[in-house]
Length: 567
Image (cartoon, rainbow, N blue to C red):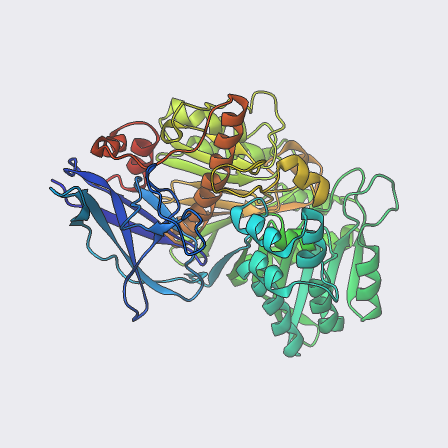
């Protein structure tokens, strides 16, 4: 059968399409992707990869860099629509493009239109999931910097750090719904005198975020760390601390560095009635309250309107206040007893805090990974030995679909990944370390490398801490928070993470973000490896219909078995 089955997945910022067909489609040279937004007329998405002998030029005589997928069809079986945006109502259709008797491309078999999706951060059950667009090493930002005539250093100065010269459009784009939600969260508290905000923060230097806390005044209670410093008594958050105290905010100093890090970034919001504070919702995730945390690192945040979970986080806040610059017996005892099975609609949440004893948190994460049945996605900053090593073994030991990205893998043996074949389609990588395009490749602009990013902007490229296990199975699991999946996070630092079990919508949102991130850096790893092997990485579209047989081999076969197993 040559019928095409299409499945569409979405979060607040992207739509991921996967399609397949059972038998070869005679004469098929690829697929056009048709998109309908709202009540508008359907349009075809464009492709940036063309046929080798295409010589069409634009009005200025330059070779075209993209064309409608009716003309340059996609020779693949998945695609992420990054042009989709929050609030869009959108549907898709896949149309095979086949060669007719005259040698011209014409429409062949097509999928049905997908059900219309509304892009939203709302996952139901009082939960919303948010991401920024911190892909500084990307074609979008490379072309933006070319157009503005700025360097990476100048990008940080003009589009990230708030000043009289800030490029607010770029800052808003990079910050995404993550930044919008954090600002709205504080505005809500500032404008309602019945609300109060309690937060435990590791770094605080972003002017917009500091302004938001200052506006709340004495209804903002903040356990504020001293960041990451080399000497006792040093304080990375000195300026923000003074501003908060001058505004009447209740600031509780917690100076653990340099021996450890007070690494939390959580917020509890609730109503205050006299002396009684009633927690109602929790904000957590990976995002430091800094310009880079909002804009140039890949980060996530999750809001959960859930009284039981809010009570749990508020109890931790109270223990941190009482502990001052140390770890009390009461704090350690509480941390060693995670709260499991908090109801979240039909799903549940487990709540973990550290530091704690005997790495019971990392051992729990290893067991979660071992229990995977279909696949695991991850995004990390600088993970330790476990659960990463176990996670990367799962591909061969259990034939799981394992894909992930980290800024840097630090543990011995964790870099032993399967790498390149001669064809990017056969390129296979369990996990990629972040980098960018270091030189012009075809129509690709120079993005800069990981080393250049570290020198100009900062160390963290991907800063999220996400594990997604079996997102489309019977028991999807999402792990997220501040915890770096490392021994120091377990044994030394203030950290938090949650384990969400059985919530398919939340799992889908995180899985799409992780897959998008993996695909982004997988291509850049391929370019880097091609350069080392001194070969041309660029591939044109094939005029041989046999290209479609890749769906039964290699990476495409693995991908389809995971995303569309029923066909």
